[in-house]
Image 1 (cartoon, rainbow, N blue to C red):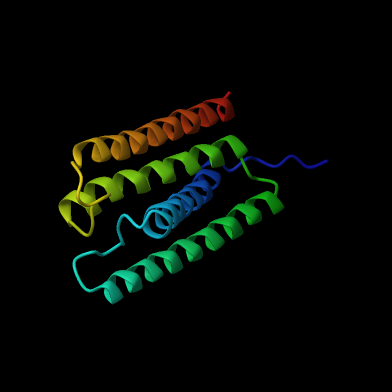
Image 2 (cartoon, rainbow, N blue to C red):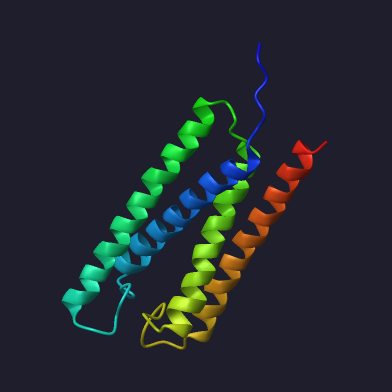
Amino acid sequence: MRRYAMDGRRSAGAGAVIGVAVMAAVDEIVFHQILGWHHFYDRSTPSVALLSDGLLHAAELLALVGGFFWYADLRRRRVLAPRAAWGGFLLGAGAFQLFDGIIDHKVLRLHQIRYGVHLLPYDVVWNVAGGVLLLAGAVLTWRARSARNR
């Protein structure tokens, strides 16, 4: 039987794309649609805000499909490194969360987490959650790499 070398880098990449897409979906579904706290772009008319949510949803769906095709291809070729893929997933989810919390919320001011409330607790929880996901992904990816190098 032929042995296949695990491809940790590509596995982590596929996981990261899926992680970004899943976190974007969670943000869009929970905060934009269910709670109605904000839209992707809140600095215009309600129609533009709704359009921006639709574009975000389309991009997240394309990333999710693309990430799963990449993941399935790695699995089909028997080079998927599951631990690296999970590490990449957490890295992608955390990176999305931090990018959204810092760049979208504070630098570009596309939207805030919620309006009409004191933002500091929301910002802290949002960004700490992203940091925890990023750190967990980094640890898992590092462990996957260390296990492959033994």
